[in-house]
Length: 100
Length: 176
Image (cartoon, chains in turn purple, red):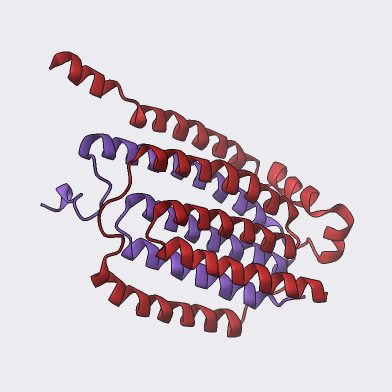
């Protein structure tokens, strides 16, 4: 049996990769995809601690995270479609109306 | 026992490799395909941990339903012309991110976590099965959050329809 610590460390690596993706990408769709990566890292950590604690509450929370991820993807992609229709652009560098 | 270890190393290395692809592929279509690969590998990791229900739901909801959203939107929005990365943030975020990972790894390897406080010990799970255990918790202790989750899905569906519809554009054309 693989010790649960390896799963938690893997979850940390995926989380950091998602964070780097959110920081460095310029396409809004790529930002959302990196967010999905981070949500998956959290799911792995939940299930790994379940394995250690002998509980199933974390798996129930993974179920809720799946629901929230579906809602987030639908609303986020709807927003991207609206932004594209207004601006004809999905580059984060040019979306700076709120900055000025 | 040995098979679980091999499966863990194969699934985790492929998941990390595809996650690097998600972050560092310039073409967004390749990034989404890498995301599918990552999600399927994470589902395999769930199976190695004995969480069969979540592994199956991961493939059904994430790798099929959510990724189809992304593919549809990418096919609607034309090809991204600008630079894929912000190099000034790349210089900062990659070392800082690796630092955070080292910290998380140290904490997860040497942290003093609790163990075996729940009622679903491996013997109990072996007897009733993972699916029945999770479903029992879902429909007894977490029944109210489960119902609220359905409400959230309804609100998200209505909201995305309202945000994404094209009516105001048609109005502008009619006025102009």
